Image 1: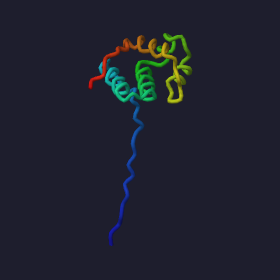
Image 2: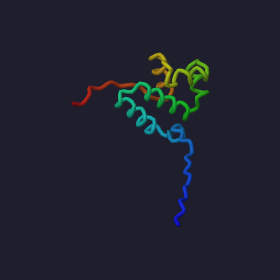
Image 3: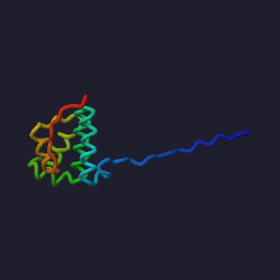
Image 4: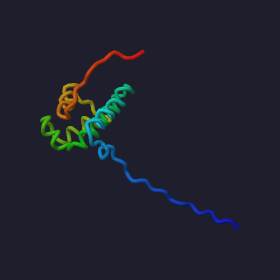
Length: 102
């Protein structure tokens, strides 16, 4: 007689903000979203980066509430281009445009 034993596998919640540590990590994450042309992914990644650096401090530097910053970077959020540029500046980044490769 065979007895089937099921093992229960659990996964811990994974938070991308916990693995973004260096400027290179930040750039790599943003480049992925830009290569995918995925605005929602880009905002999510920028939100992860902001959380990794301290959302309260970044919100203060932007002159917005912490909750407002969370809302604007949420999947349903729609931050202004100015907010995104200022946020990138606070993170020590800037956008550059280059011609697509064929």
